[in-house]
Length: 297
Ligand code: ADP
Image (cartoon, rainbow, N blue to C red; front, side, top):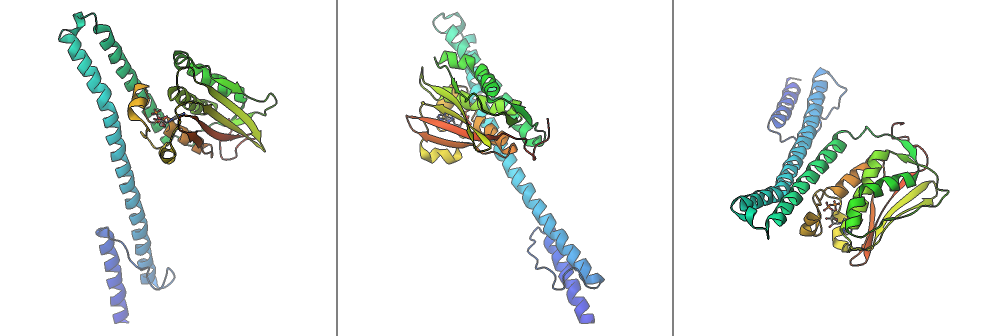
């Protein structure tokens, strides 16, 4: 019995050592949780080691995600800040009195300041959504209300591009359920992209159709399209097919990541079909009855 006791104490010691050195790969104690006090202690130590291991792993993943995110954010901040500095310095160095460039330089400063503003806005949205995921309302509303609100928000950009977004909604379509404000954001981001990645005078359609007990919502454009190899990564943060085109249009690379998050919180997915130089269709569904997983309005 002395030998047996000694063996189990050595086992306990080795598990604790592994926990301390973060190299936990201990085999479970042979006798499981129901034995004498020492077996139970061995089992508890083993379980504690396991859960510490999992927590450490999660913390490491969060840390590397955080580092990557901060790296991306500072990279995104650099270009507009350098540009604002550069144009302001050039103006102060004499270009201010040069009628042929002073206005253009000021417009460029404004453009980059707007980009910074968009970035700050999208970053705060994505952070809020990630930390506040449960706070979703579940209201009933008409799809036309959602489409109207989205179209209104992109009015200025649409006019600049000579595009008039069109709605196709069957008159007897039932109401849908979800968080109106957040879904408006989804639609704004999709319609905004359909305009941004389109030619002057292109077409943008917002369509809704009943499918069994769901309504499918589609945003369709005849713009530049996306080649198939880019499609799987489109909703990653800061992922863009054409970085300079996105930046010129004031894009942050966060729009579709926000869309994916909001739809995910509604238990919905974003689907994309696209053909380069022909156009793209982004679609998702919404329920026609309240979602049990969401809180009532
Ligand atoms: P961004 O701020 O760059 O528009 P998004 O996350 O909204 O970021 O979109 C990611 C990328 O997906 C865009 O940079 C663009 O390359 C591509 N994209 C999104 N929507 C469309 C579209 N309707 N047509 C073509 N490309 C698109």
